[in-house]
Image 1 (spheres, rainbow, N blue to C red):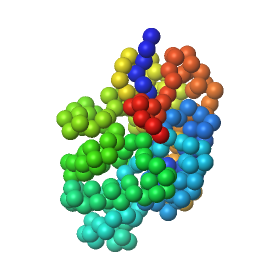
Image 2: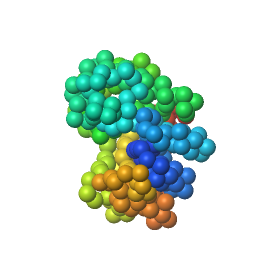
Image 3: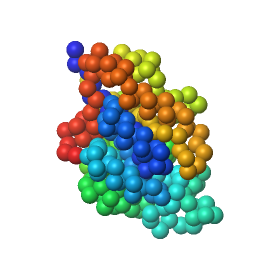
Image 4: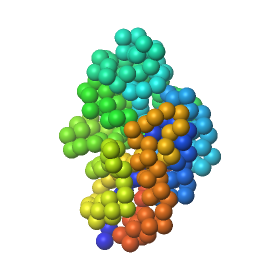
Length: 251
């Protein structure tokens, strides 16, 4: 039996050193097949170094919710400390979003020395039309695939000739988004065709600040490096891939 091409993508590389370490381990030692990198954090250089060292498949985790902007974003859009503010995202113009996206993309390519495999957006803020349009503009210009999180967004991307996944699953709430039981349930439910993205958040609990998704990251990391997780993939005959592999592109 054939299955869809499945991408297991770890969000938040570069978010915090302990998180980045856990993501790298989940990819090098485990089954995670892709990650997306925040470039506007104080910890990005270490993340660049680890990703380059191991030749990881890395996309851009576009961030408008936290840390400093890399463009000349107007003061009205920032916190009193000059950082990005998720609560103000709807106040950005499409042009301002696009300028920030281009700045983050430039930083990514400078640090990784290659383009990203794809784009996704921290906290799915491309659900807002101003962010969505800016992402479409950049993705079309550079031919990047972009994460869609539901059927409506998927259809909108395809109307704009932007490559995107056919299905999406993942969560990050009070409970871990992934357990052995959830992994098997999702393997059982895989479609036969298309590109499926599974979003995940492995890592170690952050040490630089308190996070509401800390211990859950450790549970996910432990799962993805476990023999049981790899055995489940073998049981169902599923081989995970990167975004570049799913869309037959070069890393």
